[in-house]
Length: 307
Ligand SMILES: NC(=O)c1ccc[n+]([C@@H]2O[C@H](COP(=O)([O-])OP(=O)(O)OC[C@H]3O[C@@H](n4cnc5c(N)ncnc54)[C@H](OP(=O)(O)O)[C@@H]3O)[C@@H](O)[C@H]2O)c1
Image 1 (cartoon, protein in one colour):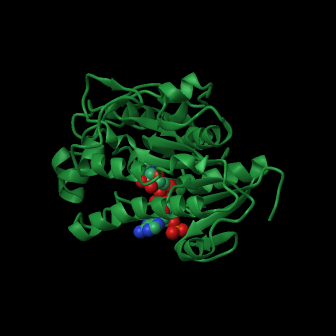
Image 2 (cartoon, protein in one colour):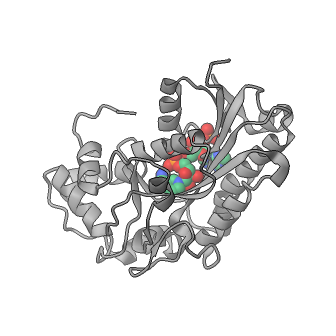
């Protein structure tokens, strides 16, 4: 398993973002090793990584593992919250430990966290220096998740933590869950829809992970959102228009709170205004900078993946 670009070890590489990232990295010439709960081809397990460490060819380590927190079939119990936390923080810690104990170190460790780090609101726009990480379950989770990626200063490994917004793409996440109602013309905003919705197209979040892996000048936190700040209603309008369907039937806030509980329903009923300052300053060019363009791509009836 060797190539000129080396191996990227990816926790959660089987998921929505992970699959797209693996495909893109393979096309660029990297070898991939996915860390998963289930063994398989081109995969290793978390216990194997703990026991045998990273392959010597590892050039980058990425973590995208995490229990789906918007699973409507799972009640928001203390036990489920513990799973949500451990599946992100512990997996990040395992990879950090594997990096610390590797004889041949990778160049970079790229992890994810969420824009839920920042306080929700319609006034302030947050860049990477914005406050947060200390006010509710999701913001504290982001802070713990990011802290788990800290390496000892003498490790010599660059670390990038991407605070990701709602990832929009046909193969998973929010668009996959909403495609059917929007296609049937019964989609619409959540509540009044004026809450901000920090978002990014799947191809751009993949692009940002690769940007973080390959740009030696990037380290620390980087916001993983599109430059255009939109509301939840703007998203619903763009999605409806791209499908040539009406999109004005709101999903009432109380229904979201009943289905998901108020604490996690906040991901849909509230939102932050977030800007990708570091991505733009370090020369990343967004393929989908505005929601109209993005919606046209993820709404296509006959869908061919670009990544
Ligand atoms: N999608 C978004 O809009 C979005 C926004 C912000 C942040 N994020 C974060 O980005 C990461 C990737 O998102 P995604 O949409 O690609 O997620 P996803 O499709 O749900 O995939 C996540 C992967 O995590 C692994 N996983 C699930 N439950 C786990 C558990 N209990 N313990 C350990 N591993 C577990 C699974 O891999 P195996 O089955 O192979 O173990 C799964 O393929 C997540 O941490 C998510 O919170 C996503």
